[in-house]
Length: 441
Image (tube, rainbow, N blue to C red; front, side, top):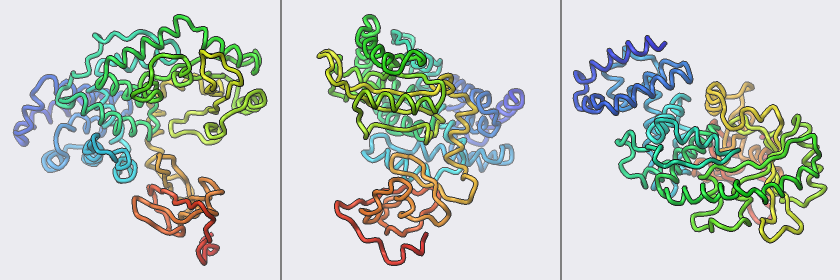
């Protein structure tokens, strides 16, 4: 396929000055051309999809012009992939409600899953064309290492990063949210790290140094892990894992104090590796018998996997009499051993499956709708807001007043369609269900 793509690129490249003269300088620029070629080859290697590779090479051109002049020389879905990518790229990261627009307006309008990897890997190539930040972030989770700022060159492709502060806002509010929505976990973390580096490199370095100070004298993390190891027994591996730097920055808040280990729970968590999923539940019971916990922060991603396929149970334990030097809470992740090998970096095949899952309906003829934070909810065909409320949380139903679907107020019996984003309107007092609600079940 490489040979076929190279032949196609040479043919198209020669024709661009003839039919799209105004875009000839863009493709005659050596840096730009290198980017287009590299991205096309990278996506072909990752996903084995010639249409996606063609769209990658041509994405510097407007999709309408591509269709007019090259339509008969393209794989059929190329123009659609480009149109969807343009829709994602049109968002303005400076808009206060851009994250909302992404989930409610843009993502439901996408028609080809391949636009998502094109959009994200294009921007990753702009930000990290040598993979320096990608590989450093991967190493940092378990063994924080120093970051050599001189090795990172984010402005390799300057057309896209004319203003680092503006681009970092776009990165946080659009790129990071898109990667998270489609379950591209490590890519999300790299993009969030890049956004902080672009907007405040000194803070990024200060956070790296802070974590490395703790690694150099790991008394506190060792103390916490040893306490948990005693409770869960010697048959499970217990260790401390660090959040990526962008997440630590987010957890601390922009004005958060970078020093003081009482914020240790914001820097990382204790990972308990269990032999299997059943043992995760057993260990959860053991921990909750020994410690109080925060019920609102208990999340079962084994019973309901995330879009990335990640499986674990998250809980936050409360330390009864913590030393003054550490936090009074301990974040815990109970992870089945069969998950440990691919938690930090999913395969390209899994990435494709994660993205496709958002586009392809499940078997059974139902509809898939979404909560405001992007969690998918499967409903039967003809499912209403009332079905949605019962599925999300049965206790909401007694207080359900109505809902907002795609920013439009609707009743509780409003039928939902594929891709709808639903906000429930919950009252403080019990609400009567409308007449005839039984007929809709």
